[in-house]
Length: 278
Image (cartoon, rainbow, N blue to C red):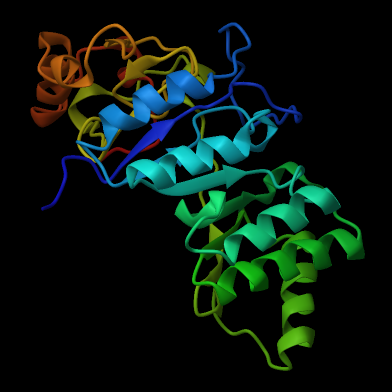
């Protein structure tokens, strides 16, 4: 049976070791979601989705009990998408542990990890060794049918170096964004988060997939209808005190959905969002 959402974003930490100009500055208190709270949340969201994406803001691999987070997802039957800057994965021991775990489908923490998205826009450049580390990790993940994406805003020098590495390794020219059967280059449009602009987009032209294909849960357990609500401006409630199913039946959530249905978003945050419009 198809569940309500394509995915639900869960921000297991809002802390990051980078300071990129294309990411919003959160005004929220630095917070790492506890394993106990994550398990509570995972048990609730599995009714509404088969996939969780460990992302809103923050670097998820900085979570001090990251392996346990993956293990919980496996236990409750949730697939996992990981969005990461890859800096922690460049650590030899972390990379070795995670790569080894990807090979084990039965008892391993990372068996639930289906997709790994490396956001490489934070880097001006990487050493040859770092490029090789990323590429070999992707090949190891591919062998056990995990999907890997290397994300860029443009075909910059780092992309060209990484492409050249794969071409030399594979002994062929890569003519598309598909590197291996489940390893890809992906190019995404650079955009401003809603709170990075005060310009009103215009109510009549605005649409959104928030609340339709996904919702998000912040590290403080606040539920928001959109994964771009990095500061929790549209809180539906705290999932640890209010059941998720009740929030999805609330008038506030219905107002959010209905506003976009008639192309007249009700909330100010949505009126400044340029991510998705038509």
